Image (cartoon, rainbow, N blue to C red; front, side, top):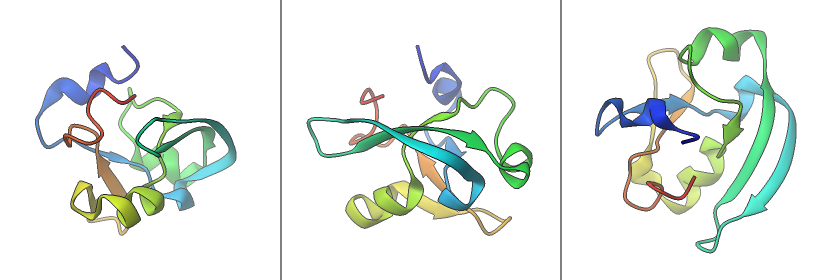
Amino acid sequence: GLFDYLTLGANMYAASDVKLKKNIKFLKKLSNGINIYSWDWTTEGKKAKTATQPSHGVIAQEIQKIIPEAVKRGFDGFLRVNYSHPELKGAL
């Protein structure tokens, strides 16, 4: 699937901060109101993401507003999203 790398652990947080992305394009809105985007990683984003992390999904700042418990700030200062959160799991 699109996010097989997320099955590595129940608390897998993926780099998803808007500051790590460029050329962001809206793809679709899910039935639960969550927006899905595609993007290119910035130079910083390439350093912050995992090697297998795709360049599509959610934007952490949006998820923080509607599911704050699914977002945390990493040691690098960038926001990360827990894609295994019940409200996000299976949505992508």
